[in-house]
Image (cartoon, rainbow, N blue to C red; front, side, top):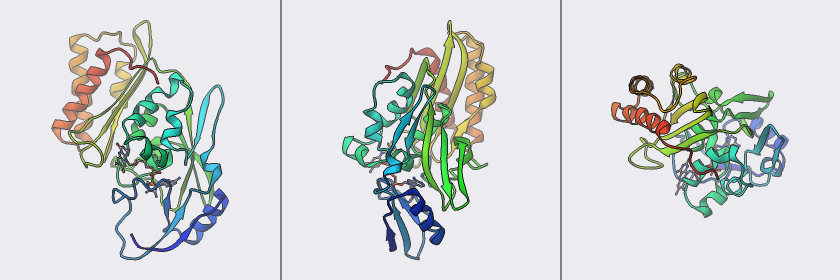
Length: 280
Ligand SMILES: Cc1cc2nc3c(=O)[nH]c(=O)nc-3n(C[C@H](O)[C@H](O)[C@H](O)COP(=O)(O)OP(=O)(O)OC[C@H]3O[C@@H](n4cnc5c(N)ncnc54)[C@H](O)[C@@H]3O)c2cc1C
């Protein structure tokens, strides 16, 4: 990528002013994805770069009883170092699968979520955890769910000329969760996916469930999730066969290979067979 102008503002307001003047600006957070994959549409023209590293507002971590809010430039390593809290277990488990501590000290949560070319590891986990995104552009500030940045065809659709500023994660407790890589080769292989599932149980009965996978597309079958709510664990043979069929179909509808779709369904089945992972 050739650069024709680099800005390094100190506030979100200055970032938005720059993006208004240069809407094609490439936002640079940790730079660890931008340096390794083609996360931007190919361009013959030099592009302006908006470097976020001096914007302190984007590094704050705040919280209440009901949620925790992470600034978009909070590093993955700082999230791992937050006090042990069961509600953050799924996210910490996802982060532990990303690179090593030096990389995680540079890589930000915002860069993981706002990637344009593919869904990164934290995306399906945050979608399962009902996290919300605060974005800003020249028209103002808005909050939206993660589904908002999934296009109708299942591909990533984080809007251009928009800054991701905060991510809000509910602190509600998940009894059972699982985050696992799903492809044969890891990042940045085009076929690498991350599987994520979270559940709330009452006396071994499923009361809430979210299951998804994401890589170059996002896969989720809300109807199949709802069918499982109210079922008691362990599932019977018929219920297991039904769930394998529904989740495999969801994968195939999303356009992944039959082999990967079968693997997705198998991971869902395995999720119900094992006890919760150790909370971080
Ligand atoms: C060796 C290695 C292994 C890796 N392994 C993994 C892995 O297993 N899983 C994984 O998910 N990633 C992996 N990565 C990629 C990367 O480290 C992470 O995805 C990281 O979280 C990206 O964050 P960043 O701050 O570096 O993003 P950047 O590279 O700075 O940006 C990524 C994208 O997000 C946009 N962006 C960044 N911040 C904002 C914002 N606030 N608002 C709007 N747009 C924004 C950028 O314009 C760009 O399109 C790996 C990288 C390396 C080098």
